[in-house]
Each structure stands twice: as C-alpha cells, then as structure tokens.
Length: 471
Figure 1 (cartoon, rainbow, N blue to C red):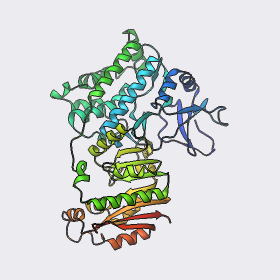
Figure 2: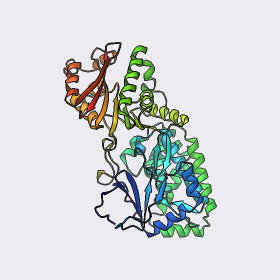
Figure 3: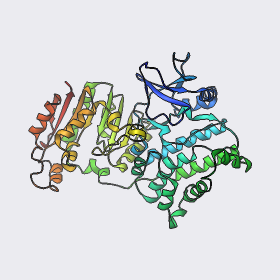
Figure 4: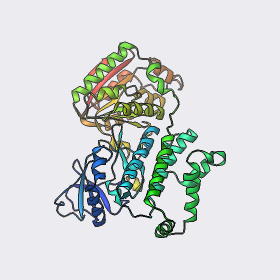
C-alpha cells in the first residue's frame, strides 16, 4: 500500500509484515493496519492485557486515531509514543540483550494467558526508555488459535537466545554475530559452534540441536502442514505456556558478566588529577546547561560520569562506549538506579554501525540516527587521531556532523606532551602526526563553529572547548 504525499514518511525498517506499516509525520510515529490487523488491534485495545502492559511500561503507549486520517489506505491508524532513540541489538550489552529477551517472554506469557499471541520474536521488537526495555511492535499481537505453535520462536532463537548462548557459554561478544546478519544467527551455524562436549551446555540440546533437526525434517512441509501435525499431536495453550516458562528459566540462567578490561578501570588509572577532574566536570556542567533540555550524545562515555552530568540538564542522553564490558557495567548500574534518560550503547567510533538490511536502509546507520543538541567528545580525539590514524580534520568533521546546527560540541584536546598521548605516540613512527598540535586543532575548530568557551585543565596538558556548531 502507498500513502499520498501528505508529509508522511515511510519507516524503512517496517515492511516485513504486510498487515501493518510504520510511518513518521513530523515528530509523530504512526502505524497503519489492514482489516485483519485492525480487528486484532481493537481486540487487544479492549483487553486488560493492553492496559496492564501499558501501565507497567512494558508496551509502548498507543492510541487509535479516530476518525482515520483522510486519504489513508489503512483500516485503522495508530499513534505511538515516540521512543527517544532507536538502537539496534548489536549496539546493546549482554545484560541489555538478556533483559530484552526476558521482556519479550514476559509479554508473550501474558498474551497467551489472555488469549493472544505474537506473530514474531525479533529482538528489534524491543527498544529502550533509558535503561528500561519497551516492547514496541503493537502490530505483532493477534488472537491465539489453539493447537498452533509460537510463530516467533525461530526469530527469538536467532536474534536473542542464540547470541546469549554464544556470550554466556563461549565467552564471545555476540555483537559481531548480530551486526553481520540482520536475521540473526542460524541454527546450523550454532551447531558448528556447539559441537562435541559443548552440545550439552544449558539450552543447547533443545534449542540448537533439536530445533535444527526439526527444521531439517520439516524443510519440505508447509506452515499449515506443521500446524496440522501439532494440533493432531495435542499441542495446547498450556504446552505453549510451559515452553515460554522454560525459555524464561533458561534466559535467566544466562546472566553473563564480562570480565575486567583495560577500559573498565580507566577512570581510576587514567592521568586525571582531582583538580583536573573537578575542572572538567564543572566545564561540562556549564556547557550542557547553556544549551538547555535537548538531547545529548556522550562519545566514549566509559562509566557514565559525564553522561550523568549531562542528564542534569538534557532531556535524553545517549552514552556511547566501545568496550562491551564497560557498557554492561554502566547499564546494570543505570538499571538498578531506575534511570530512564540515559541509554548506554556499544559502539566503536572508528567503526560505527552502518546502514543494514534491505537496500542498506532497513536499519539506519548510527550517524543517521545520532544528531544531538550537545555532543561530548571528552578524551576521544587523541584515540581516534593517534590511536586509529584518523586525520584530525576528519575527526572534527564527524563530531560536527553529529551535532545539530546551533548546538554545542564539547571537545577535549589532549596535548602531545600529555602522558596518554605520549603512550599512544610511542607505538607510532616518529613524525607521523606533525599536525597534531593545539594551534592546528584550534584553527580547525574555528572553521567549523564559534568557540564559546575554553578552559585549560590545571595539569596544563589538556584543553576543553565548547564550540557552537554553525555559529
């Protein structure tokens, strides 16, 4: 179906279910439903299930627009509460993926008990309000037909359960597996990873090897044939609920805590003195306060110290950090604090999430999602320019591109004689970075915006700048 030119933009990532489609109209998030999906929605909206899930914050706030907007081809149009920032599962930490899986199962268990089910089990059905997961695919709910299996089981395994098994049982970061394939990890790939004695680890015999064998056995059967076989075998809602409870117990066991890393202890071992830290915190606080209650992006967030300072003034903060172990620790802390305005994400700034999926736009690239009113780039520039050999002008071009016009870039320049810069330079050939100098950096800044504030930290080897982009 198509929508007339009324300022409505189609969401590129919403097309796999032909019964509904997501659109954007200004800041509004809309969902169009065909006749069948509209019936399912109205049954859901009239149920205690919908009210309970919404009241608990487990389901995104949703209302039907009545009358239906003029010239729409859909039987019903919904308006959803807007999620502050759309992230992808390969940008989450292990604990985030686990909590997303548990929410998915909690929603499904409540739906089954109320006579509903969900059409799919994708990790992309979950987004975040800070450190709280929220189920967003309202169009996934439909009436339960007894004797039919959960249609989303395979997706759940591929995008949630299998990555958790890889992380917990093998100690491998799951993020590259999910980033490589939008549909997740296939059962045959899992069988190769979990061969030999590994095949007996928790969850693997049933959800990897048995699941894979059943897929192979039924590869030539239609979906209706498989459903008929299950009905004939006496598959019931009680059995479906038992399966969900078993999955929930398994996922709860997969509470993998990454080990320590260099960056997990960075705040203690880095070169900041107490006066340096105090001056830096005060500068960041003033800079974010000057911009007001917009969005903030903290690049290289580490333990979230400066993200929390930004959250004193900004409406929402994205805290980006390369090390999955550090992000995991930050997420657990924010979750325990009940924080709803800081979202931690795993991201290598020298290799940020690209566009992916169908035509490369089904999942938007990080740089297309992440423009903010305030961008914090603290102790980041030298790691990119020296550690990763990114030319200094290109580093600043990227930081400016992430900053809204009229917004502020708060950036730290670590002088070449700083202990951390000297450590990075020691691993590089002499003379490789002749332009990595404070005067050259300031000249580059002045061509990209107006320097509204500047301070040199007491140590004398680091300088902070607040740059108004486009000013």
